[in-house]
Amino acid sequence: MTRADYERAAQFILAHTQHKPTVGLILGSGLNPLADEIAQADVIPYHDIPGFPVSTVQGHTGELVIGKLGNQFVMAMRGRAHYYEGYSMQRVTLPIRAMRAAGVQTLIVTNAAGGVNVNYRAGDLMLIVDHINLVGMTGANPLRGPNDDSLGTRFPDMTDAYDPALRDLARSVAKESQIELHEGVYMMLAGPSFESPADVRFIRMIGADAVGMSTVSEVIVARHGGMRVLGLSLISNSLAHSHDKVSHEEVLAAGKTAVPKLASIVKGVLARF
Image (cartoon, rainbow, N blue to C red):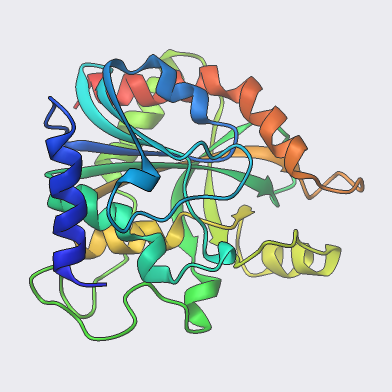
């Protein structure tokens, strides 16, 4: 993928909306209903946008919703494509590049994740303070290949991948709204198979609090492009306590119960920008 691909997608998006959003929002599994709260919305199906990857997963509608949320104009992805669907990392992250080319400066990324921390329960929310890029460590980094210096530096720093000031805003909003907000480290695996009990023990041992199959590659590309990032995980199931088999339906059901809490935090953060 090249800069021309990103700009082609961005130009198509801007030609099909009346708005000029500066905030991007990615809605993970079961979290699509948050997009229903966007006012003055222009809706663009992914399959219409040049180069956009189209998700094949239940719970990922595949629409770009552009409008007003929490006093800010946002570009919200109602669902995402994943590496395990057969797309390259560069294709998975094309929407982030397109957002940046369209003028988006801040990215709020959400996901449904399995809770590895023993204090987490299904339906909890976690503020992402750091990540473990296990997929990238084994070679599948979205920045692999020749670097376009006009997009970002060859070796972007990930020390504060999740913006400290945005994290402070999220903490403040959660406290005022009396919403319990855990803080922890998110790990990305390739998927699509769920984690084995041995996987979970290993993941906990190396310092992760929650695990999923997305987000980290998107954050890396966002930071490469100079975007500020806020990350929130919905804990869809407790891998630390449950011995039942995990299902995608369970993930979607947990999303429905957590959307009001997540919406309160996202809208509260947007209102304080």
